[in-house]
Length: 189
Image 1 (cartoon, one colour):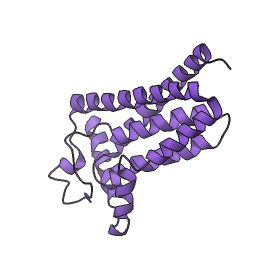
Image 2 (tube, helix red, strand yellow; image 1 turned 30 degrees about the vertical axis):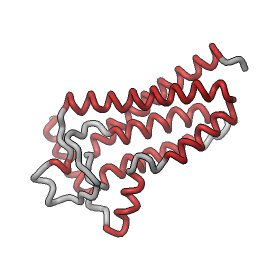
Image 3 (cartoon, helix red, strand yellow; image 1 turned 120 degrees about the vertical axis):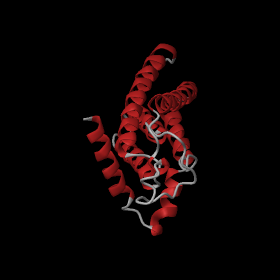
């Protein structure tokens, strides 16, 4: 059963990865780069400050820092625990795929980019939902694009992405609940 799932995952990876073309490679390399979306994060922090105030922003900044650190470190725990090689590290796949990333890395299960972007999307989207009801859908779409970029550049299988997105969504929701509790307890309305 697991072997069939991994075989399907490899076939789906090859299909999705080979949809790319040299025309779009530079765009996807920009999308997959960690600092590309710093302006988006700054805008989200500005919106949180605007709607909740300075004291709340300090709580948000601390929580987001802990949340991203948590998702990033848990990703590393899973990668070292499962030790599933990345597709770009598989000798029998390299001739059948498009590898355009700057580096490959050793293990890929699960995707840190996917978990981090989804955690940020869920957290900010839920916090700001009373004020910007459609923002969460934009952020979820953004997270999905970031996640797909990891397949496009050749460093993650679809299963790495799905598990990363799921972990990120659960983490983002948990930190959203924690933020609501801290705001209620320490920040007067």
